[in-house]
Structure formats: structure tokens, C-alpha cells
Image (cartoon, rainbow, N blue to C red; front, side, top):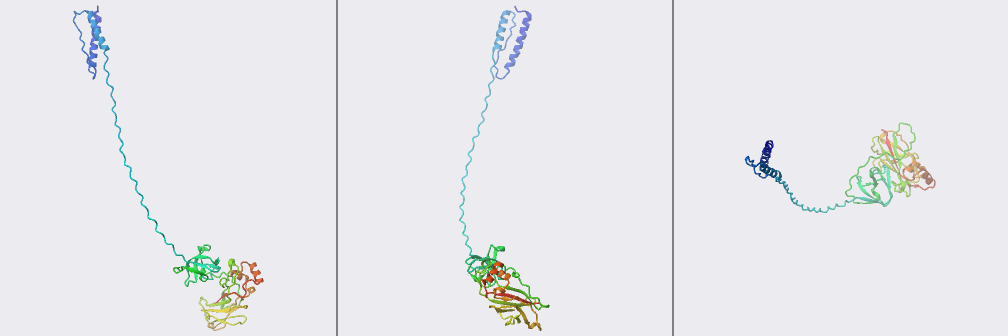
Length: 349
């Protein structure tokens, strides 16, 4: 038989169990539980109550709650890529073929002798090289009367030189422009010291020079004569203090050979022909002075090899070295009888 203290404990447990089941039935998704009724009929035997309570408690304790459903993850839609249109290739335009450039017409000359190339259009200019016969060169300029061509010549300073137009066949020269002509140089040949005279001297010698073999019509490749020229003259020029030509001035020599008067072959000019003799020239008369005049006298201007100074022969391309000149003079292997000269007298007032 249950004692009273045990019944009190049992009722307390049943009350707590009732509260617990009420709380569970309020959970969403939990199954509804039948309420537990506690009989208070005192007529029920205690053993029966105890058995019923044990059944109810056992039923409640063994009833497994329904588990909550596991949430199913929502599938994320994979975006379908959009096709990107492939650009159509652009056709490369066909370029038109270049227009052909017309070939320029080049003026040129082919020399027919071994010809000196000079720094300017004249024999007063320094020799800068030699064109062998048969050489063809480009013409890029000319002087006023077309007696000289300016040519392309890489061996010279500035890449150009001048040649005489008398010694070659030129083509396409109609449009050749005037070339830039350099200043006339001072004479490159040595000038011997004149014979001293008693001052004052009315006429002094400002130039006396032997023509180069090429100027005289010959050929001297590498500075040594291989073909002598044909000239044999002395050209005399007389000028005043300002450089103007003087006509009517009488030229003579120390041997009283025939005299020449300036102006006979051009303004202020006279000429002597050379054969085997030579001339020591000076001014012997100037009527405009109103008195006798004095003059310096030239070195002998001769057609004989042995009477020509060796520096003059070398400078005029008759021989390349002093030794060669001496040997060729001694063996009479130069151009005896075929030499020409320039001489200039200037009045001092």
C-alpha cells in the first residue's frame, strides 16, 4: 500500500509531467498528446492507480517526437552564356601600284685625253686630280661661256671639280645651270726673287709663271709629262695700280730684241713667240708717264729645258720630283721648244 508521502511525491511528478507535455504540444510540428487525467476517486484501489500512472508515464516517456524535416537546399540556376557574335573579317583594300618615277636626264661628258681636274674654271686654279682619257663624269654646272664644266669629283674638297669643255664629248647639257665659281687663287708656282733695282721702280712684276703641260696641250699623268704640248708663247699683261689694263706700254728685253706694245692682242696685252731663244722682259717705255720709266726684269723665259728653274718644271707637271727633272733635263727628255709663259707688270702709281 502506498503511503501518504509517496502519494504526494507521485502527484508532484504527475503535475510536472503535465506541464512538460503541454509545453511540447505547443511546439510546431509536435504530435498532440492526450491529456493525462489524474483520478481522485479514492475508491480506486491504490495498486490500480499506481499501475495506471506507470502506464501513462511509460507511454509518455517512450513516445518519440517526430523529427523536424531537414530543409532541402534550393538549386541555384546556372546562367546560360549568351553567344557572342564573331565579327566578320574586314577585307584589306588592295593598294594601287606606285607610279613609276621618270629617270632624270643626267648631263655628262666623256674626256678624250688625260685631263686635269681643277678647283675652278681656269688654269689659274689649283689642280685637284686627273681624269684619264675615256673617263665619263656627271656635269652639274658650267661657267658663262660653257668653256668649263663643273663635274662630280669625290676626290676633291666639296666633291666637285672643273674641267675644260674642249677635251670631251658632252651630252644633255642644255639645262646645266651656272656653277658657283670660287675666287681666283693666288699663283701656286713659286715666283723667283726679281733682280734688285734702284727704287723707285715704276713697273714691278706681280706674276711670271710657266704654263702647265696640260695648259700647253700636253698630257702629264701623275705629274710627269708623257706627251708634250704644242704652244711656245709668252703672254705679257700690263696693268695700273688699280688693276686696270694699260695700252700703249712698250715691252722689250735686255738684248734689244724686237719690242711689243700692249693692246696689240687685247686690252693691256702683248705676245712674244718662243723658239729656241729666251727673253728677259721689262717695260721700256710708257708715254703716259711723260718721262723715262724704270721696271723690274723677268727671269729668262726660255724654251730650253736647262734654262727653266726646276721648281717651275715640277709645278707645271713636266716632272714629279727634283731627281726626275734633273735626269730628264740632262738626257734631253722633256719638251724642249714647247713651253709657254704668263707675265704681268703693274705700274706702281
